[in-house]
Length: 137
Length: 114
Length: 139
Image 1 (cartoon, one colour):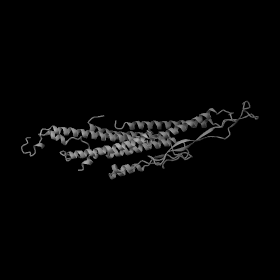
Image 2 (cartoon, chains in turn purple, brown, green; image 1 turned 180 degrees about the horizontal axis):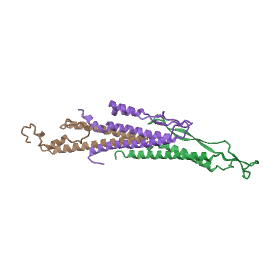
Image 3 (cartoon, one colour; image 1 turned 45 degrees about the horizontal axis):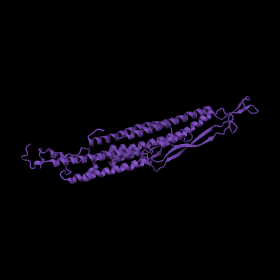
Image 4 (cartoon, one colour; image 1 turned 180 degrees about the vertical axis):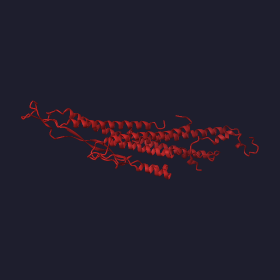
């Protein structure tokens, strides 16, 4: 057994566990989504503005990597992208596709997801700390 | 539990102090250190510490890089900086604890009557 | 340091909406002003918005646009002419040209602008809450 590697693999079982990596990636997406919603609401009345959101293939790519088993190594390349939401209908003659209520609802949902993801990451880190130092907090 | 019949008295149940050397490290999930990391040779632990130092170094420079970008305003990904700092702190903490346990075990060993 | 995600976007939006609110308030205040410094009745002013590129494609997440006031223009359509010979600004035929401010239209604008302003405020509040939560990771 390569003893030099052992040092490296001591903390990585947590830091490279699927759920931890997923949570970190999804947290990146949640932050980007908050910015997208900020941009959408800012432009709620700009003529011709189309709403943007995180590209749906982000989650698909993560799922694919998870199924393939190489999530921890390949996840660095997967980043959340912003694209124009093609499914948003334009209710106004000037082509603006933002509905404020819809954006606010999306923001609330995103906020809860963000809280959930930070909780997962936080718990993982706290557990590791506890295991190492034998002390809580 | 007399040592009669056991070839090497050092590995009998009557030498509990030596058994402690086998378990100097906290149990971590996924850890497969087992007893094969040559507890009797200092090289094994030395190399392991090297590995740990390498991890700590890597995590700390990652944290440093991300934090600096946030400080300079190049990035607004606060969460990446926070998480990287926490990971670096945990790795560092592990390294310190391993070092402490190693020293403890070494001192224990030196105290043994041969 | 930009620690709260999207705060620069929301800040621009709040500034733009504030300008719009100010203009609407000005229109309402001058709904009866028949004589201005340049002569003639008050003409309603309109604010138009345009997008402002805050972050380009290369950065984390991609292109993001905020909003800014493109221009404040004057609505040149003529106001209603009212027959009121007693009015100090009445013409020889007793007609007074009123400002082209339609109060119900202005009220709708006021309510829309306020709603958008409030929505941007809650975005800012939410973003700050998310940042605070992030800082508590691991503690």
